[in-house]
Length: 81
Length: 205
Image 1: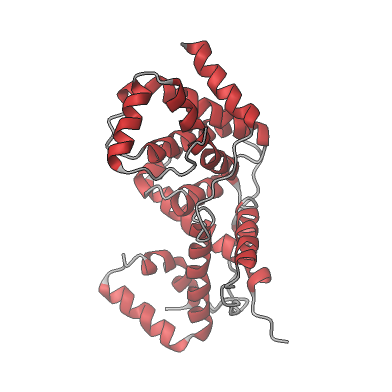
Image 2 (image 1 turned 90 degrees about the vertical axis):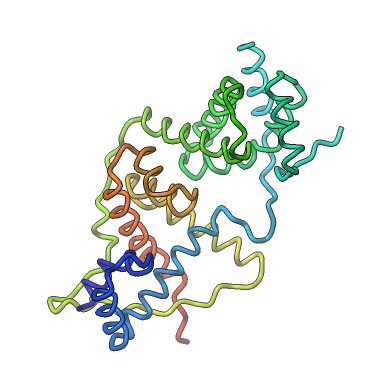
């Protein structure tokens, strides 16, 4: 296996969707390629950072809704009633 | 009157709240908009760069939700139900706005040498910061870079990795195959990784 094949199947690797033989080939490549070890770590970090965009670990604190938007929504409901 | 601003009421309270909505209680509707509107606006803004479009999507979502509350079975939380509605409203807005010319994602994918090695060896990144301000700055950075992805890949990334839709739900929402979702998600992550790298690379100084 080379780095190109490693990168092509990276998502299947971290999702544990690869057959055992292919997974073993991945592990073997990782044991000899420090750059792919780093690539794997930073790919995982990219996924983690993406997930953190909407899950704020510092608290839920949803933004305030502009008052004029609230009024528009409630008016739209009344006009439908 | 103090209106609770969290969406996390106990299940029994949630059932009473849904019953109030179904009976047409004005105060319950206002509470729904005030407690869920901010979260929904944040979701719409992730898909739509224009503030007017994002607000329209939120308004359309609430109007749809009010119309269909009678059919809401209560097998999901109200917040989860509204989340799905606003995601679909945002996607609908993107569709009606029409497809804009899109650049290829190829230039954001990693390059390889003839022997299959990475053309540029991967660099290690800084450890995630512990302070709240830096973490908020990184969230802003990530979202800005997500918006640099071509739209077809960006929407898959947003749905799968940020809005937590599964592969089949994403395929259904975007009207593409499950295989296309998987391919686009992987390419979007590779591209985002490349866009983030110059900002997060560990300095060697």
